[in-house]
Image (cartoon, rainbow, N blue to C red; front, side):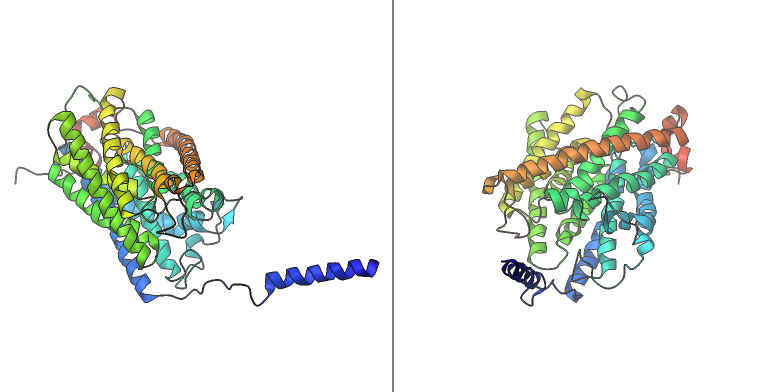
Length: 440
């Protein structure tokens, strides 16, 4: 009997070993650089890069004339500073080998150590360096988005310090949670194709914290503060729309069918949202405005971002139309609620990003992307719950961490300019220059 038991145990061990190491086991996909995919991702990276200066124009047209350069400077400085931080430690914290059970990436890739021309596990057909740089452009624009909430009143030194800390202690962990093998993406199973939580909800919640701690602009609610250059804003919106094709379609990480799907859903959702915002404003206020249709287009781009590679083109129309109405309503409520979100980061990126993440849980279908999941309307209510958990976790983490970092910055350099500098305008008071010279 003893020998019989030993033989059975030996047979089990042999069977398990064969299952684990046998020749029939499926090999991992080969990692071979594909020139077509690489070319598309280089172009996509450049498109996303253009979004940040485009955002600067979009924001700058909506502020008063005395703050136009200061507003553009905020976005352009993020392009410069974050590019360096990303290479040094931002990328490894976001996408480096997982540490602490899905909470953060390790420092093995500090300074791009071992990140070279060979493919990575994240993208098996393009060089690791290309994937790194593509993701870096997302890291650049996210803190730039926050600047719209405190436009015309935050110290430039405070902005730079806060953004460096925020990228390290807020953006990088959340990016790892969702895209770098962390608990939201790899373990919880939430879907975020191109940045609904990582970029838009993240920046909007940080904007809420900033609005609370920095306070309102002097004269807000009493002194008119209309946009000074709407053609500039519309030009910026057009550049954002153009760059967003790289943002969303590039997130397919290949130049194939999935990229084409994301390209179509991105354009369709933006157009639907612009029309929905315009109609809502036309009905509510009696006139359709250029600022409204441009804001609606951006709202649609925000909302489709998490869903772009998981939904059908028809669903993207519903997502976009919903974003137009939801974001218009959120922006319209701002004066009644009394907070001063200068350029409506919360109303567009917060409301739009939240709707987009939830809509992914409604409209996602494996019929267009087998790597995704079916949503509620395709028989899987669990995905909607999963998306909701990811949203709530993002809100809680980002708000608490952003409040803490803003308080630290306030103790070190102070958060806002003094009243005299605010009255003069950031262009002259902070940067010593004017956006317009009408004397020459």
